[in-house]
Amino acid sequence: MTTHILALGGGGFSMSNRGEPTALDRHILDLSGKPSPLVCFAPTAAADDPVYVNRFLAAYSALGVRTMVLTLWQGAAESVERLSQADVIVSGAGSAANLMALWRMHGVDHVIRQMTSSPEDVVLAGVAAGAACWFSGCLTDAFGDLRAWRGGMGLLDGSFCPHFDGESERAPVYAQAVANGVLPAGYAVDDGAAIHFVDGEFRDAVAEREDASVSRFCASEEPTSSGILREELDVTVL
Image (cartoon, rainbow, N blue to C red; front, side):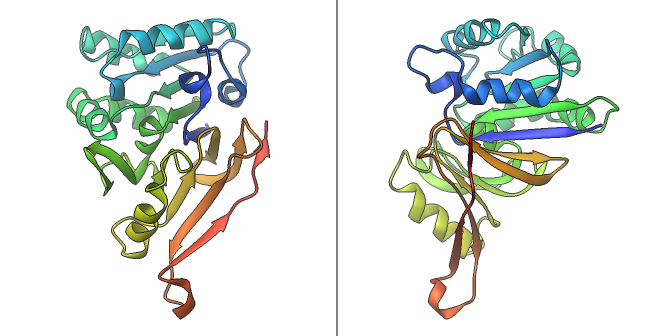
């Protein structure tokens, strides 16, 4: 079995002009290797917002795949029971802290861990908060201010900073958190870019626009480094 994880800093249908699917959405489906995968959208971070759900259904139905939605505000038990049938899980944007609290309460995290160790291949994708959940830590504004938080599932070692080019304060806050050891080394990802992992190992960085970038941050004791090293990664434009 193979577990693909694609973590988007932002972008995809969530941020397209008219809610249309983008190159990143198509890449998620390509990773499944199936002509018509069953794609489950998890809008938990956005409180199961029906507008967001309808936007997903419109975008992904246009791609000719089968769709389902993980709902935890209504019919949670039945929804969680069906989750393991999915070939692809797409976790939406919103509040990372709320997402993890509800996933743990309803056992969603347990089901997903079981899926990653089953004989079947699975693709786990996510946008912003929905991508941060796969890591052990992230930068989030779920508590009001922008802060470091270690509350993710830890399927991927390290930390994640989404929307890196979308908010100017993210760069200094993330760099300081990694330099001080509040967050482990990790990745800062622009809107429209994503990082791809296969069975927990970094594979590549991709983007749906040419100016989107991805950087790896790690703490450093070198005197000239100001406590942080930043490496800009090669990005393949889809």
